[in-house]
Structure formats: C-alpha cells, structure tokens
Image 1 (tube, rainbow, N blue to C red):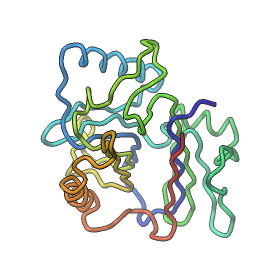
Image 2 (spheres, helix red, strand yellow; image 1 turned 90 degrees about the vertical axis):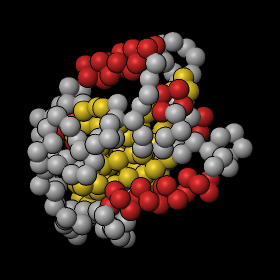
Image 3 (cartoon, helix red, strand yellow; image 1 turned 180 degrees about the vertical axis):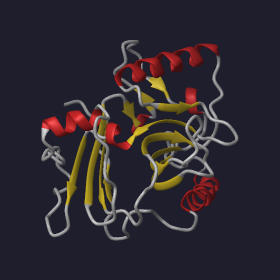
Image 4 (tube, rainbow, N blue to C red; image 1 turned 135 degrees about the vertical axis):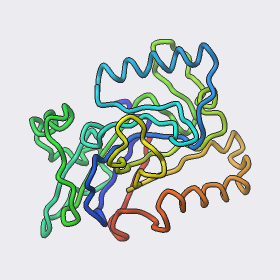
Amino acid sequence: KKRRLVMQLQGKLKYKPAGTVFAGGEISSPMKLGFIANGFCNLILKMLKSFNPAIHYSFGSMDERAHICFPASTFFEGFVVTPPGQTPPEMGGLDFCDGEPPDVAAARKAYKTKIDWNTEDTYSMSFHSMYVDFPTWSVVSLPVGKPLDLSSFWGNAFASLVMYERGVNDEEVHFTESSRYILSVQIENLGKDGSANVRSKAAVLEKDSKSDTDGDDSQWGDDQLCSNGGD
C-alpha cells in the first residue's frame, strides 16, 4: 500500500466528552487563496464531501481556524476499543487496528454507529494517506500529475493533526475558543536546510499549544499517548 502519511494513536481520555468529537487537520492562520487555488480547493472539498458528507471545513477566520475535519468515528481507518484488563493492539506495524471486524468498521465509517467515549477504555486509532507528504511539504499522487506545494495554500502557517470536542452550540462554525482539544500534533515546514525560523516559530508553537489545552498538555492520559509517523 502507498502510504505517505501514517498516524497511530493509542491512549485513554482524561474526561468523557459530552459533544461530538472531530478529527482531521487544521492550520494556524486563515488561508489567503487566489482565484485558481480557491477553485482547486473547492473541487477537492466537493470530492471529499462525496466520500464523507459529515465533513466540516473552513478557510479560516478570526474566530475559527482553517480546517478539514470529520466526526472522529468516520475519520480513522482503524479503530479498536480495548476494555480495562485486556491488552490493546501493539503499535508500529501495518496491522495495527486490524482487529476491528469489517462490518463494525463499515458501520462506523458510514456514521451509522457512534463511539461511546469514556475514561476507562483504551482507544487505538490509525489513519493513513497516500496524498499528503509532509517531508516534501506537498500533495502528491493527484490526477494533475505534478506535486502541489502546500505553501501555495497554507503560506507559512503551521499544520496540526487534531482531535477536539466541538462546542455544544457550534453547529455551523467550529469556534476555536469553545472547542476543547483532546490532541494536537503540530507540524512545521522548516525549509530545505531544516532550520528556517526555528527560534521565532518555537515561541509561537509553545504559546499556541498552551492556548489549545488551557494549561494541560493533552486530554489523553499522561502515560498512554503514543504517535507514529511513516512514509
């Protein structure tokens, strides 16, 4: 399988979410798109919506980060719930989360079933993509043939892989202030020499991280969080 991006998560929650938990990607600044880039983005979003009508997206504003997110149950390729006293799947291999029965996975991805989030079970989740290539900061394997530079759409913004609980009243807009972040893995393009603006942006990352979690490092259990990235 061609996988440019592989993400594996495993852990317990620190609290029981009351609202819908979303997962996906977001960037730190509103997108400023030209006519062609805007048209291309809308084409991609239309295609994604045909696969998953539950998609929620925004190009960003003062109150809402630019994002493409889905209800977490529909976002992850694999999802295994391990009750207390049982051993969760081992992380690192391509067969991670393969223990989920196909019929259960199909119902989950179709949003026919919802996840009973709690603080007792251990959640193992996996996501992969053949299109997003963070090492080259580009989108690849598209019908247009040529890789597309993510900077053309995101500028110098940070990217984040996120999970968050949507605010109770945030149906149309996912307001940043009322979204409760469970997880945020921030990614930055350092440039070809691997050191571009590291010092200045490190402070922004630290500040942004503190803002997202309201003083907590994560809403996962402290000793339960792992994540892997792969080519």
